[in-house]
Amino acid sequence: MSIAAMEAGAWVLCEKPFCASLAELDMIEAAERRTGKFASCVFQMRFASSTAHLRSLADQGLLGRPLVAVCNTVWFRDAAYYAVPWRGKWATELGGPTMGLGIHAMDHLLHLLGDWAEIRAMAATLDRAIEVEDVSMALIQFANGAQASIVNSALSPRQETYIRLDYQRATVELTHLYSYNRDNWRFTPAAPAPESDALTQAWQNFPADVGSTHAAQLETLVSDMDDNRRPLLSGPEARRTLELLTSLYKSAFTGQPVKRGSILAGDPYYNSLHGDGTPRRAAK
Image (tube, rainbow, N blue to C red; front, side, top):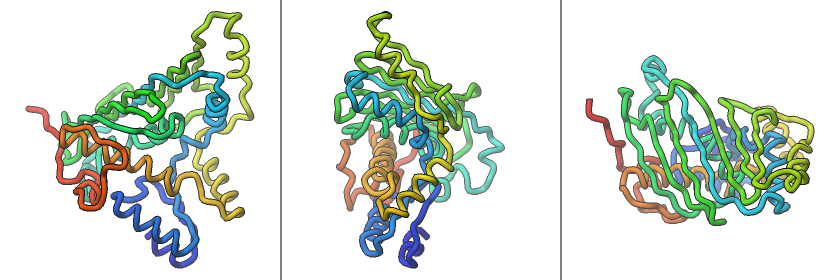
């Protein structure tokens, strides 16, 4: 559908999942080159003004290097949720909480930390009667040296979306569920006051508060269209996130670490997010 719309002369904004495989993403990017139009994915977590503020402080070097990160999407989806015919199946939902729930927080993490280099993962179906996984976990090595842990769960009664970033000079935490604004952040400097006063003041100097809404992303997209500029969530940025999810599944189902850039044409995971693998199932 995205390709047909671009061929007809339209820009495309697509809800996640953007597409079903890296092979499909290559087809979309080829259509972009042919038509001069762009296709972009909805990842509204990137577009809050508080995230831009954090990125600005990090880019200025005020926080020091990022060292450790935690990214948890621990939500709850019961049997009734999965009773909807298209849910819980590889062919129609494309994945479990990795693809359908945690994708937003993982994309947000990549937006904050940049390029990833290697992933090691596990995935299992522990409780729900579904084809796809209901939990996944991963360890990620980033190109800048930072290391992160990820949990994606559909089994967690106390629901939470949580990102923690430990920089050399401060810990920054974000706790929310489906959206956030600047009040959802917590800032803890490494040094005691008054040594950290200037850093704390810089953190507290927030811009006008814009939450992580679809409207914020749409406003940015309209500006991109006016300037005929590639939108943020297309091209390399869209690929980075989809490749991470694909590599998480490959690592989980093969038991091997996966390096970024290693899934190419001919690899079963190039044509399908879950390749030829299936999640481990808990004994009943």
